[in-house]
View 1 (cartoon, one colour):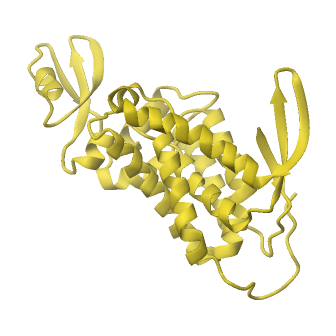
View 2: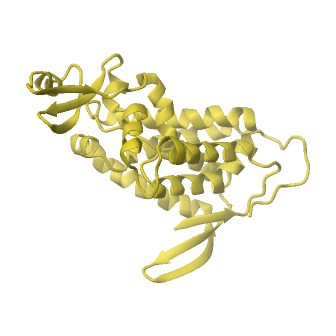
Length: 273
């Protein structure tokens, strides 16, 4: 299911939502030099600016590539037996990743993406649902809310397996916060949705609560699996489901506190098309 537009108009053009989308696209295509997937440059940027759970939960401990001979091994981090083993290899050893400070990666990771579909999916959901959340909070509050949801998402995934060394990237956790806020703020909204069923494609208008409920279930169930097997999920990479759940919960928890009780500065609505 792909959301295309909702039926909730906004009063003002969503400047910050569009700005975030533009920044993520520029980072992907210019900084990461991504195309359909990531090349060597993109992979380097992910290693430099992605949020590595071990670094997040062990401030001050750096990570590197453990190399044996001419073969590139896994990411290894200071204070672990793998790091010490890599240091003892001759020839070989550890190769510095050139990482940004660990606290900075908490922010930079949410503007990086691992592929064009990863980027497109996040930006589509942010455009459809983010404009209403920005409108409900006001521009000054929206950005801190978005970043907070992303930060909680990073830590939710990192705390699942504090020893994981696979970088976490993507706006999914922050966008999940927007989705959680939307579900609580506009439970009666309807969303024009593109649905694929094998070779059958159709447009259907469905309640936002159903769409977002299905989305949350599809994140929550795998997150439970990651909780049961954190070592496997943390080292194998893939989708950070626990980050999505963490971000969604932030949206649910904060929207009623941050949304304005009354519409200020009444004026013509900006329709969402």
